[in-house]
Length: 108
Image (tube, rainbow, N blue to C red):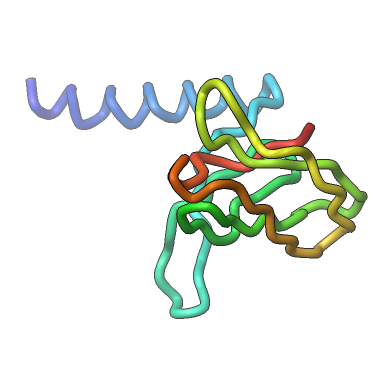
């Protein structure tokens, strides 16, 4: 039984990943190498990547080669206004720090 499970689980994961890739779906969280050489989780949707995150302030990086409008998701009922970010640039966005940290960055 354990031998079958070791084969079937990776196969199922590979099929699911292939299905998502074929459909053009991008995962909300992807692994990205950091300056220290370790891997950290980076949240992104489309070209907007959450670069740094503190209560009341976040930095969004444009990871594409076109200008985008982006913001962050702070609360299910409210998000800061969108900002224009040129290709490869990182810009800060702020809000009332009592609302907490951003969950992820996304294009508007």
